[in-house]
Image 1 (cartoon, rainbow, N blue to C red):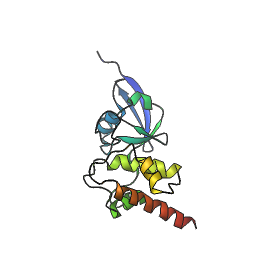
Image 2: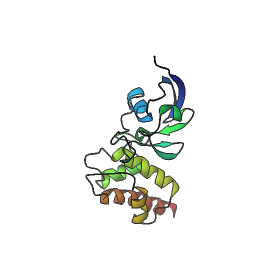
Image 3: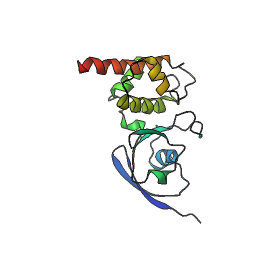
Image 4: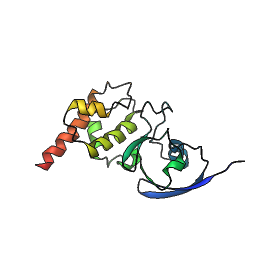
Amino acid sequence: MSRTREIAVTVNGSVHCAAVEPRLLLADFLRHGLGLTGTHVGCEHGVCGACTVLLDGDSARSCLMFAVQADGRSVETVESLGRIGQMNTLQESFHAHHALQCGFCTPGMLMTATDLLRKYPLATDAEIRAGLSGNLCRCTGYEHIVKAIRAVVADRAGNAK
């Protein structure tokens, strides 16, 4: 016998109502319930950061929380950033600076970087690296990811003048 709970979650600006089991992870709700497969599941322990989404504007590991915990809240996934042919500035910078290889960590990196760029000046590479320290990448060595984020920061600074 399975008990379900009705939830209403705003995902990428649209409200989604669903009956879910209390033990359903937010990552599984997004991927399997809503078909938003950009949120990757890597370690399932909150260590790798591949499942990072923004929950009410703050980065969160969707593999560590239940969908019922997102009831009444706002979730942004990597799909909210842009799409092929209409990428946002950060996605374009990742592309231009070769900040991805296999791409598995990329959605989590993009969401973490989005959160960082919204909240912090990121004046140094050390600040960028510290902000990304919860996201693992086995391919790039992070250098190109840092360059991509630094380019967005520099572009914003140039446009502010």
